[in-house]
Image (cartoon, rainbow, N blue to C red):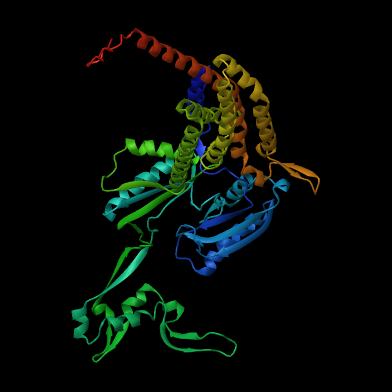
Length: 528
C-alpha cells in the first residue's frame, strides 16, 4: 500500500508536469469591461487625434454585445503603463454575460473591424485580475551604458515578433522623430550685444508665443494669458533662419551666431537603481498561458549571446507570480511546522505526527488528479489557497483515526486488531466529513449560481469563475485524502507497530545474550 501510494504521487506530479495545462497567476475571469488603446505616430494635433479616435469609435459602436462606449482623446494612463504613441482610449462596458458572446470574441471582432484603418493600431486590453501588472510578458533590460541597450532591445523585440502566440508587442525606445537644437555661440552673440535669454524669447514667437500680460473676462473664472507670436503661416523652420534680434547695432539675423542642428527625438528616460532601463512587452493570444511563453523566452535567452553589460529581468505578472508562489510555499511550510509541534506534544510520538503530515503532502495527488481530469491550469493563488485549506480537513481526519488507535492500544488490544477496529469505528465520521464538504463545494466547482429569491439557477457566471480552482483542489484533494485516511494511514500504523515490535524484540534478545558484568569491587561476604 505504501509503495503504491508513493508511485501514484510521483506519477501524477510527473504527468502533470509534462502533459498538464501549466500554471497561471490568477484565473481567467470573464470581464465586465475593457479598454481599447489606439496607437498612432506623428506630430498630430488634438483635432487630428480626435478624428482618428472617432473612426475607431464608429467601428466599435457597430459591434454587438456592448452596453456603454466612452471615448477619450489623449494619452492618459491613469496610473497604468501606457505607450507613448497612444492617442486615445475607448472604454467599453459589456452587456450581461448571459446576453452576449464571450468578451474574447467581441474584442477579436473589434481588432478585425479596425485592422483596415490607415495609420492607427488598436489594442484591446482586458482589466487585470488581481494586482495591476500590465501586459502579460514584460522583459526589462538595464545597463549603465545606454548605447549598449539598443542592440539588445532590437534583438529581444525581433524574437517576440517571430514568436507564435504573442501580440501587441511594444518597447520603450524613443519614438521616431526629430528635435531641432539651437546652439548659441556666446562669444559671437556677445560681439553683437545680445545673449541667450534674448534669443530664447525671440524663438518663442514661432512656438508658444511670448507672454506679455494676463486678463480675466467677465464670463470667466480664471485669468487668460495674452501671448504674442507670428501668424500660423510663418510658424515654420525656415522662419528660424530669418529671425532678427534687436541690438545696439540694429536688427541682426540670429543665424550669425545660432546653429540649428537636427537630433533624434528623446521621449521619457527611465532609470532603475541608477541604470538606464528599457522594457519590452507583449500580450499572449487567447488560450495560451503567459507562463509557458515566459519559460520559452528564458530558454532562448540562455542560448543566445547577450552583451554582459546588459541585465535582463522579467517583470509584471511573472514577478508577482513568483512572489505569490514563494509566499504560499512559506505559509504552507510554517503551517506544517506548527502542526508538527502540536502533534508531537499531544501524541508523544514522532512517528504518528509524521503520518499525519505525510497525509497532507500525499493529498496533493488528488489536487493534481483533479486538475488533469477537469483540464484546468494550476492557479498559483487560488489552487495554492485550496491546498492550504485542504490541510485542515486532512489533518483532522487523521488525528481522529490515530487518537482512536492509541486508545485501543492503551486498552491492551493487539496492534493488528486495533488497526482494524480503528478503521471500522472511524469510517462513518470520516466519510460524513468528506461527503458533506464535497457536496457543499460541488456547486462552486461546477460554477452553479443558485438564486433562491429569484428562483433561478445560472451556470458559468463570472462571479463563480473565481472559485473553480480553489473548490476543485479541495474536492479532489479531500476525496483522495479520504482513501489515504482509511487505507494508507491504517497500513502505516500496522507497519509502524510491526517494525517497532521487531526492533524491540531484537534489542531484548541481544540484551539477554549479553553476560552480566562483574563488579570491579565485589561485595563483602556476610559474616557467619
